[in-house]
Length: 91
Image: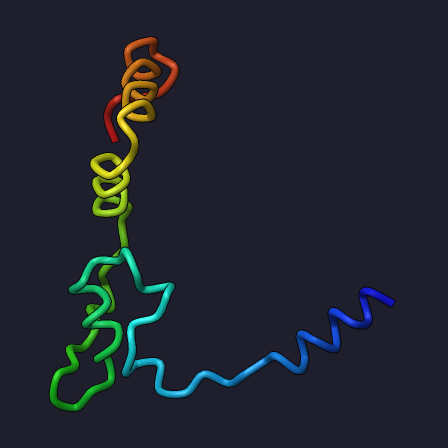
């Protein structure tokens, strides 16, 4: 009974997202502003820029952001793990 009610609610609450390139949504919050801009304008004939087909995404910017924005206690634990040799200090 509960599963059926939840399934019915989910179907009724489903919506189609249109014009997502015209707004910044929750999944964009916290991303690099340049990345959001170019993603949103990818196919725009005036502001768009073609993707580099040979480009490979890396974790560099995300890792830097996570390191500098993490709570100090988490950063201290990470440094301790590196010093104890439990994880590599170079990436």
